[in-house]
Every structure is written in C-alpha cells, then in structure tokens.
Length: 175
Image (cartoon, rainbow, N blue to C red; front, side, top):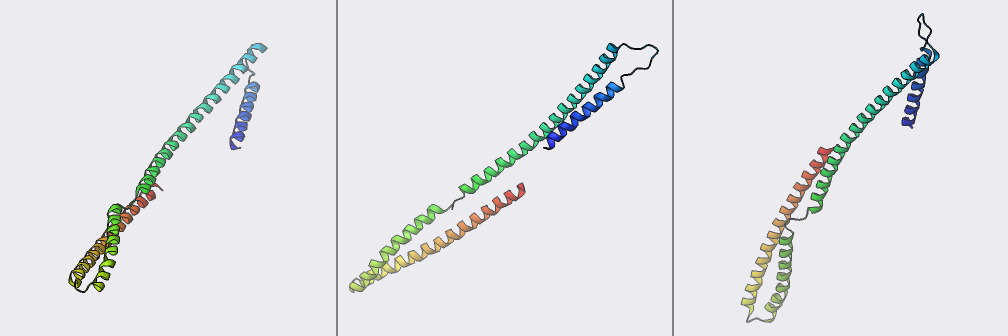
C-alpha cells in the first residue's frame, strides 16, 4: 500500500512540475515566439523532466535491489550455518555406543551364567569348590564390567554435554 501511495505521489509531483513548465513557457523578448515554438519548448522540458524522474526511479530501484541482494546473501549464509549445526546435532550420537552395547550384552551373558553356577553350588557339594570359584570369578568380572560401563557412560555423557554446549554457543553467535 505504501508503494502505491509513493507511486501516486511521484505522478502528482510530475504533473505539478509539468504544469509549472507549461506555465513558465512564456519567454519575454521583443519578438513573440510562435505557438509551435512554445509547445516544442514545453514538450522538450516535459520530456526532459520525465527522463530525469525515470532515471531517478531506476537508480533508486537499483539501490533497493542491491540492498535486497546483500540481505539475501546474509540470510543464505545464516541458513547454511544453521543447516550445518542441525546436521551436527542430528549426527550427535553416543560415540561409545558400540562399546556400551557390547558390555551390556556381556553383562547379560555373565548374569545368565551366574544363575546356573549358583544353583550348581547348592546341588553339588563335592564340586562346591570349583563351582564357588567360578561363581566368584564371574562376579568379579561382572563388577569390573559394571565399573567399566559406569566409566564409559560417564565419559560419554561428558562428551555429549560438551558438544551440546559448543553447538549452543554456535547458535548464540548467530543471534
């Protein structure tokens, strides 16, 4: 709407200036110019005024176009940067996921092995020593695996939090 009002104002200004050119077309000399000379002079002045306005409009149009292109370049760069951040965020997975999964499976396996070994201790007194020793070894292994798992989980959480903070800072620098 503001664009239409501006165009209307420009047109009104042009009409007003053309009227002033027509009104000022009277040339004071001893000779009286012919009507054709006056009309030709008025037409030339009006045409020259029109051309000047067209050149001004074209110049302003180019200025606005340059500003738009500059802003579009900034927007495109910000969009690329945000896409990179989103890609990093999407790719952010637990870096020790495989190790943790392996250890969990191993813990499950050890847990499954512990149960029959404990039952075997109760059933077989003469094999008690061997079974008890195997049971204790597996418990020790489970404790070590639990410890290792806790270390890996803690390290993994620390690394992910560090990366999330970096990404968050990166987004803040955009704003």
